[in-house]
Amino acid sequence: MESKKRDIRALTREQLRDFFVSQGDKAFRGNQVYEWLWQKSAHSFDVMTNLSKATRDMLEENFVINHIQVDQMQRSSDGTIKNAVRLHDDLVVESVLIPTKTRTTACVSSQVGCSLDCKFCATARLKRMRNLNPDEIYDQVVAIDNESRLYFDRPLSNIVFMGMGEPLMNYNNVLKAIEKITSPEGLGMSPKRITVSTSGVPKLIKKMADEAVKFKLAVSLHSAIDETRTSIMPFNATFTLADLREALVYWYQKTKSRITYEYVVWEGINDQRKDVDALVEFCRFAPSKVNLIEYNPIDDGDFQQASNKAIEMYVETLEKNGITVTVRRSRGKDIDAACGQLANKSGS
Ligand code: SAH
Image (tube, rainbow, N blue to C red):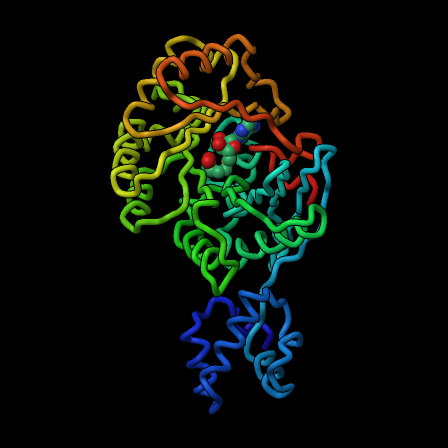
């Protein structure tokens, strides 16, 4: 019987209203339940106190609320918090709270594992098990918002889709989650405070542009030379830089939103003048800025952070060419919570 129950959060507001009408009840009960499920993040029917006991029992008989469970919370010496998040089918993903003086950022996962094969990323070593549902993405954000209020006395301010998985390979669910997060019926957050980070799937970048999304786009570039990029991000053989570039130009034309390129400089891989020159060239096609990310070792010796001198060369050259560049220090390294380190070590 248990398995016959439907996940109530897969229903739209209209479907919930229809359900109540089909039960001989008033449509507005659907609104009440919808509000409990999303705005108030209810994890059980029992807490829905403006419904009669009989109605709550009836919901219980028909539906489940497949909520997440924060199994384990680790705190870094720099304040970063990593949650091991257990899903209803016992799979585990991770999400991270990153506090700064003025912001709290949630770094959320979009898939269990990842189907891409970036050589430098720990998540790539877990095979992709499944996509997360919109409510599972939403719940990660709610959990981090609660932690931010509890430990830092302020609400969550920003969200980045830089946890496990490739958000564009779970396109529909990620967009549905963002819709709920930004809607006044959900968390009412501004889409300008949300960044979707992708390895770059050209067709889907164009699709987002066509849908006039309002969130920000970050692209994990790491090299603007096809041969090099393919050697560290093999899917680049299929989604080449020329296609990516065309999609990004299209994105900017449609959205007028500046693109962020995420970029790690590794010794012997992309630390030469020709690498930075190619990046400068790539940045000319659409308004953009560059985030130089520190490499977070994933316990093998293939990749090593480039020397400070190489990073200096990047910064100087980019700045000389009028391109905004920031050097981002990693957070939460001591608990394997930094970019590319999410691999369910805590959850296993
Ligand atoms: N799949 C998405 C989002 C997840 S990765 C994407 O590729 O953008 C989030 C960021 O961390 C990406 O920029 C990724 O390239 C970077 N990253 C992955 N492994 C890393 C590592 N070991 N050290 C530093 N950054 C890493």
